[in-house]
Image 1 (cartoon, rainbow, N blue to C red):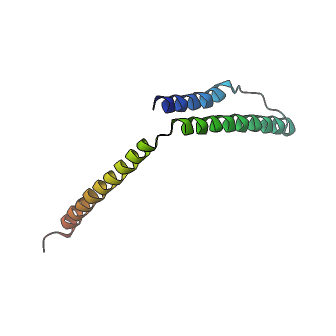
Image 2: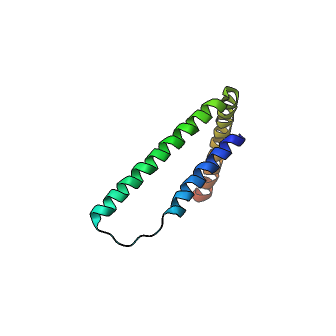
Image 3: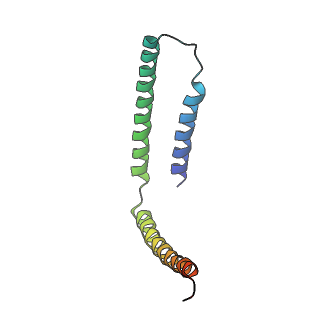
Length: 101
């Protein structure tokens, strides 16, 4: 679990680093800014693909089928409980709105 948090933190810091590095530039003609934009876009997409591949590899290395089964079981139980309580809540609200007959 610690490596997943570390990976998420790394990706957030990477994105924030790109935001901080971007310095405001004076207005240029559209041709120069278009090439700069395309270079930045290619660079960011390259970094994104590299980070995505690294994240997928890390996930596959740390994948635990038993944890997946536990999460699936927990999801099923929680959705059943929420569905039950949502039904009770809906019945109570409808009976309050409808009033006594």
